[in-house]
Amino acid sequence: MVLAHDVDRDRVQARRRRATVAWVVGICGAALMFDGYDLVVYGTVVSTLIRDPSQLGKISPAQAGALGSYALIGVMVGALIAGSVGDMVGRRRLMLMNLGWFSIGMAFTAMVPNPGLFGLGRFLTGIGIGGLVATAGAIVAEFAPPGKKNLCNAIVYSGVPLGGVLASMLGLLLMQQIGWRGLFWIGAAPLVTLLPLAMFKLPESVAWLASRGRMEDARRWSERTGLPIPAQPTAADRTAPKPARVGFAGLFRDYTVPTLLFGFISGSCLLLVYALGTWLPYLMRLRGFGPQSSLMFLLVLNAGAVLGALGASRVADRFGPKPVVATSFLIGALTIAGLTLKVPTIVLLIIVAIAGLGTSGTQVLIFGFVSNYYRTMVRAAGVAWAAGFGRLGGIGGPLIGGLLIGAGIAVQTNFYIFAGVALIGLVITLLVPVKEYRAQTAPHVPAQALSTPVRRPVTY
Image (cartoon, rainbow, N blue to C red; front, side, top):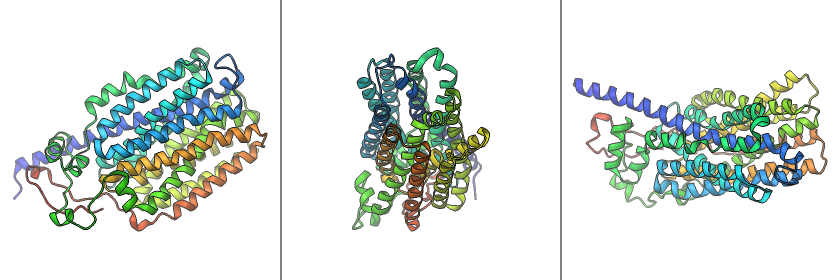
């Protein structure tokens, strides 16, 4: 017999869970907007920095490519640090720390007088971005409802290309009025806007607390957020020959092959994302388009990534992420090669929009794939590995683009090379072992039984 007060309690908890998921997705998505903003704001101002030595001094295309890569080195460092400690210190604490760090880094970059300090500011900012990217996926995977995990991840990680859209629009509208320094000051806004909001509204992960044995804290947060407590391993599970390990130790012991593959998948995709994010306006200017038109291509690229990733994530929730990621890489290869075509501008803009799905949109799908591939105690490390190791490709993107342009390589050849990278990503994606992937549908403790520990093995 179901008691009326149990039904009412379940309804209250369901409402709390919906509100919690909305806040988590909203805050994490807003945080990642500034990852995309940081990426594209540099692509927005790089032409000015190269053409006008009065800004920071004389900068060559190769040097500009190196400056674009410094932020990505910082992202790699920040992501790997987050992966090392995120599964031990908690998701919420790490998210708040990195929001503050990122904002201060953007403010520092806005004030520097020379290329050397500009590069240092980019590196420091990247550390905060890396921590945000690595932590957001773990948080969302543990709060998103079953059957909507890829969609929730896509919404959050679509913040990256959405931030690119914001940077492109602000570059078009405000570059003449506030200059490149003003655009970087806008990137420091989370310090006084998003960070205070996150301190009040971002909860700690109930699944993470339970995995660390902090059951009292897990029950308290479960009551506040409406999320059930995942069932805990039995005594037999805890005395098994291979006890569960946390972080990178468990990641590389239990998921060695898929983890290595995810690193190279992410690396190939991020090479495309950062190469095009940095050099697409410049390449289109070499093709004869004016400054405003060149920035418009960057805006359309990121807008296409947002819309494409959201649509593709629904397909990934139904059919699995692997075939969707592979198809997205193929779309990227075809459309990047299509940028060499001599077609009307409107057709070229459509091709660029679809290329957004095949580049930044693909990276959104990859993070959804990775976030839901691993068990709770290694999830942050898994996302951090994909974000951190993958940034090696991101580091190479601006560098390779700068070297190709500096060497006088034809614009068409640049695009063909990037299309080949997308095909490499496609092949590596097909090698990921599907049998390792499990939807995160572990049994949970019902709301009315929060006070009674349930001992059932977790299924991954």
